[in-house]
Length: 163
Image (tube, rainbow, N blue to C red; front, side, top):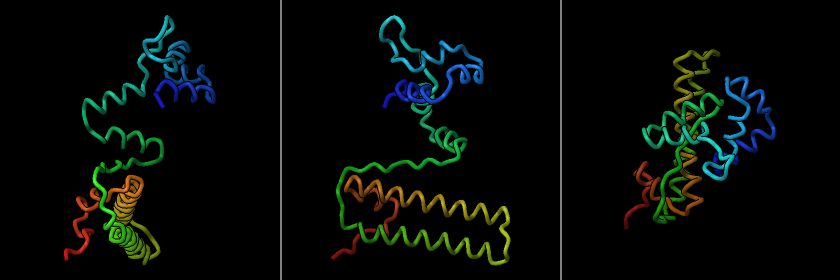
């Protein structure tokens, strides 16, 4: 989906007038964001989504996306690149996810043992949770692509035994 198409859908559920007021822009500028750029007399203008994408490409700094995701109450996990199938990694990769989950549970259990969670313990729990999400997302993406080479690169212990 292109950015102007997404914005068009968003504006069907949100008041363009309210968005304009919230952002200190004209209603026509908001509507122009939802038009294809460079097509016809009423062509769209560079919208914030395109600008964010350009900023990301220019800087190559994924923290921009992470910051936006955090503001939206979520997180960002980069999909691994894949180009070679290695189905022998399936079982060890599954075991890695189970191990990451076990490590998260161990951190939670240790932190909760005294019936309170300190800020440092919360940070440790968050770190283990982020690692579990990352490993699991990598596994799912590899499943979808039928390629487990990226898991081998990140987790060498997942390599199948050599004969």
